[in-house]
Structures are given as C-alpha cells and as structure tokens.
Length: 159
Image (tube, rainbow, N blue to C red):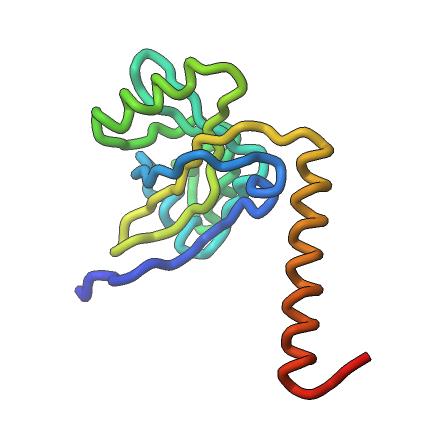
C-alpha cells in the first residue's frame, strides 16, 4: 500500500485568529481510535469549541467534535471525548510554563493529516478585547484600500 504524502487539511478554526492574539504555535499528534480516524478521513470535524489543557503532566484536547463514523457499529467513539495530545517533553515543559501565566489559553487552529498521521496545530494565545478586534479589522480594511489604490494607479485608472 502506498504511504500518504503531504498535508491534507480536515478542519480549521478561523475564528480563533480573530478572537485571540497568537503568541506561539505547536504541532501535536493525536491519540485516536479507529472510527475517529475513519471519520476524519471523510473530512468531518469541528474545532469551534476546542481547547487544550494540561492535566497530570499530560496535554489533553477537549471540546473538539469528531462525529461518529457512519459505517461504525457499537464500537463507535463518543464525538466530544477528551483526546490525548502527543508532544515532545521539552515542548510540554514550555507549554506548562506559558500556561501558568494569566490569560493564556491553548487553542487548536487546524486539524490535518501529515504524511498519513493526524496532527493538530495548537496555539498559545491571549484573548483579545473588543476594541483590539475592531482595531485589527480597521487595519486590515485600510491595507486593502491601499492595495486597491496602488493597483488602480498602476493600471491607469483614477477616480
């Protein structure tokens, strides 16, 4: 059987980049059951309410919804169960140190297959206030307007 190569995106948490300022990003492996992997291969998952926590020196993913496998039997998994994350010991020490600071959260950004193995991109994030979100939106909008004006001047159009 040919080994899967490359990266295949399953789910993304686009709202996380809006609600949080991302400080650092880690790639973690996931401990999954067979029906969870089959459900992920069908491209079904939701990271919306997901977060990671450190419990008894281990990293756990909670709140991520992987729906039951449609062809599964009584051995099917629970859709919102806690799943263990796999990271190197030094990365875990870094995460423990960073989460001891106030206001820091571990948020999943994307879930994907990398060379046939399920991986999750986990961000060390700090929550944004409402005014920070508005400022980021205005900044992005101003950048778009500048790019539009530059392209209009290059093409010879003027208002």
